[in-house]
Length: 356
Image (cartoon, rainbow, N blue to C red; front, side):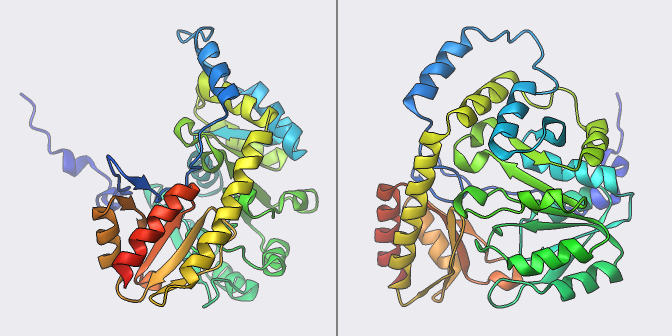
């Protein structure tokens, strides 16, 4: 009988990591994961059930995702050969690091921002460094460039709008960063649909720019579809490390249908943006809440009476938010996803009761 010491076989850097934890509720209002609170259209759901009868589940999916790439090309104006599909955009973040960095190389990002940049870098044996955001959750390109140069960074990730702060950084500062950095700038536009802003058109001018997007935030979180638009030369290299058949048949088909008939989703996006404005107004009326302006489908706010306490009380009452209190810059901060009007009203009622 084998008695191998499995812990001895693990990489030291992996031993030191903490798993990415996602809280969950069996019942209640889930406003913690930045999902679309509305289901797909009845027409699309009907098509999905019909399609299930036709799918050859014993066959591998299209390895090149041709139909989905064409739908994305039609919507964005990008060429299909520039587009790579990922099992969520997290997969594409990993591929970029694998292609552009050797072990020990440095990648950079603002702080605070999306945690997976740093986690993925550490998993791959890279060194993550960050540059600070100011009190308005923005950054100066010059400061960022100095950090990048000092640490010889090869990649910089910019979440636009930024998660978890919700805002779009200064377009002028991002432009300076793209123009003056001699590495790759990755604009992670997972929330761009709610902001109406994008750097996609800048790709014609700059060959060091990559744009990542996701369908998780606009209705397909359960199917895990992300995509990246790359300079053609870089796309060719990323495809060398992409896992074969990394997007399943159903996900490809549903995503293609959704993009080809986007009107229903666009109406949902408009409703979320409208609710975001209403929720922001209501939060601003509470003396114990400091809410930060958002261009996303969520709002970051600080609970001056204690974020940890409020998080636990809301969870006990059946509403789950994202607790960000562990981050040094986000003490007593929680993040709430914009839900339906009914969900938002329930959250506000519970918040008023618990924050007084």
